[in-house]
Length: 149
Image 1 (cartoon, rainbow, N blue to C red):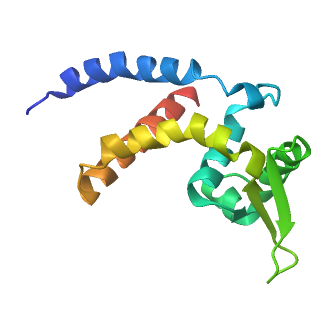
Image 2 (image 1 turned 90 degrees about the vertical axis):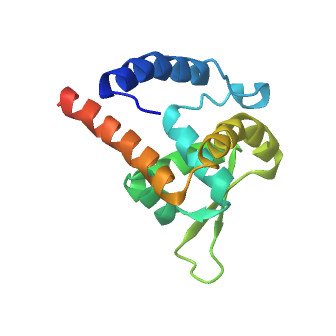
């Protein structure tokens, strides 16, 4: 299948707003609605959902933000009962963060749908093709950011 750059751009210009709109129309489940979760919380929760418990430093590196920023988000969500914090038994200076068991199913039902959809879309591709999709989306994001500067 051959598609010109302009044909691909036209298709994506129609597709991207539909994808964003669908994501925005997926509200948090009722048991999480009162927590006023912001987009930055969704990325943090997604990592914890996919990876399991992680240290604050690991979360900061994956989210590409300062550890202090993650500590603030974790503190906020811990006070609300969404997350659990504990000391690492091997290194008492390290804080391990996980989704509170009582909210895990709701978060999985909510955010897990997106991960499952990406698995369906990316699963049939080779490693190289998946890398191309990801690098293309990252390049698109950088190009949008360059326009804003």
